[in-house]
Length: 268
Image (cartoon, rainbow, N blue to C red):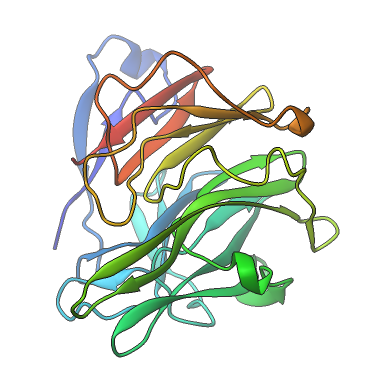
């Protein structure tokens, strides 16, 4: 099994016991199933890291598996599976609930976009259907942000062709879901498209501004350097791209916010 690592001092609360030790990687209990990739991971308060879907390395088969890791207890729990096996699912936690808003489903020759969406009922341990992504906006591998009870999806993949000729259909679509109304809401035309198409990127929201980092386009691994920003409190102004760029363009990356700073991790 692949080991799970946690960055001690970055993700754990800083206490008197940890304050005097340098930041270091701490090995944790292994994930109790076969390794997988092309999944999505979210943080569910108060202390759970939840892994959703993906593909298994042993069979390259798309899975509906959902697993939750407790940071405090250093233990894994298997939750109710997704209603449909998905890889590259779009997921977010809003007001203590996990939302999965579309993704890619496996066929014999490709991974195809689906707009099917669900919310996880934590007390009952089951998934409940919510409003599906509009058919023309269905996709996986979108970057996800949360602000004021709404989930924002930007970019992503409509399809990955698994047999020759291999192809990936990257999009620039921006969608917004209101969790309180269970409704996909209109995005102003000036904000409805990213400045460029990208997938396998990451995003963060700080002070109502939605930042998008990295990503690739149609399978190219070189990565994107520009950083598009959308003010979610003034969407009519559209996307802005500042002069500051990523020092090294990356794709297949992850990011998070720690004390108003955006931290980025990548594998290539």
